Image 1 (cartoon, helix red, strand yellow):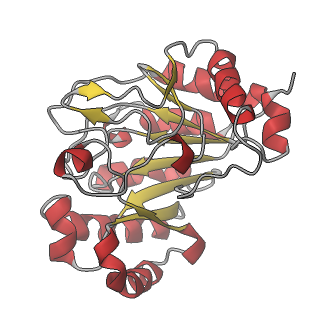
Image 2 (tube, rainbow, N blue to C red; image 1 turned 180 degrees about the vertical axis):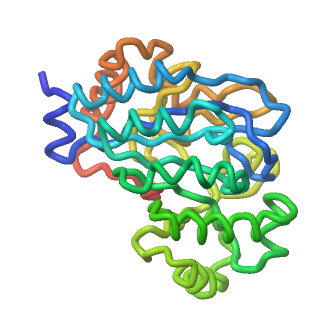
Length: 275
């Protein structure tokens, strides 16, 4: 039977495992996939559980880790957890970038020499238009955080979620990212996915299993096909991309993902290539 390590090494299975650290957030973005907000139900993983997932992922042959939420930097144990995870595998941690006050910036300085990237969301090159979908003052907070983090030596990626009708903004957005000191290869541009609040509003691109790379994603509720899998509508988690409820040991969920990859037609690839 093919192992996860072999499938990852041969490029048959994506190497990253995603960990949903929590579900609550300080923002309430109008297209949020997980309906995160300050009032969202608190479903957070412990530091011990996150590190255990990272350790098991490495043992199985996965090659990278992703941490997302909610807003991960709301967790008081996040930075020591990131240190432990980055001792195991390369890490990318997703954030809305609005919490980086002087205290947090000083604390994140320890991440500068790690194989770790902080991925910050910035959707539009215009401050007013950007803030409509995210929050008042978001553009200023994010651009300031990017400058401060890069100055401290922390590697920053920027992720831009774009609706189909905003293509004319792309050149200005790319120039802004470059001006902020972020490398072009660290600028992730992805379509707005029609899940969560975007689904409720009828905006974004509808997606299914065949549109998303099968990256093992672990939440407090189970294992999912993709980091876009555990979306929430009306306070209930979608289960159309649920692999299994069991996540301990990680091998059970990983084997389920591997078997589904193996059942796909030869030449099958994710159409959207969302990262």
